Amino acid sequence: MRERRKIKGYDVPKSPYKIIRVGAKTMREHRYVMEKHLGRSLTQMEQVHHINGDTLDNRVENLQIVTAWEHHQIHRAIRNASHH
Image 1: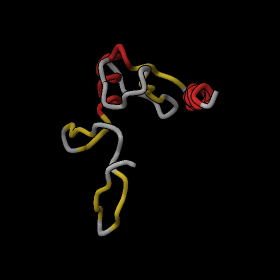
Image 2 (image 1 turned 45 degrees about the horizontal axis):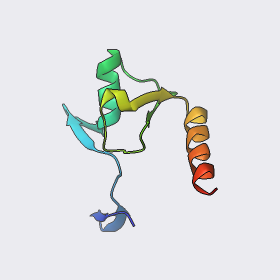
Image 3 (image 1 turned 90 degrees about the horizontal axis):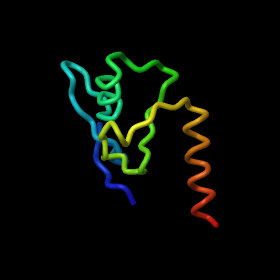
Image 4 (image 1 turned 60 degrees about the vertical axis):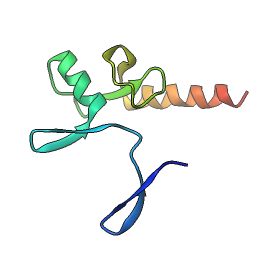
């Protein structure tokens, strides 16, 4: 079970992603790492997949840009493989 925390009085799951502050905004570290690597902002259509499944491993070699559909397919294949 994921660790939980209180936000505005509500008990919510803690994010499995590392959150960082960049200037005045907060963002997920893996998206920031990929943006810096590419030298541009990610589009709304781009998601970042952690190749080894460790959402805290934000080395650029562990990150892959995918569409939402591709990301869904990757995780579906992982779930199906773990059930066989």
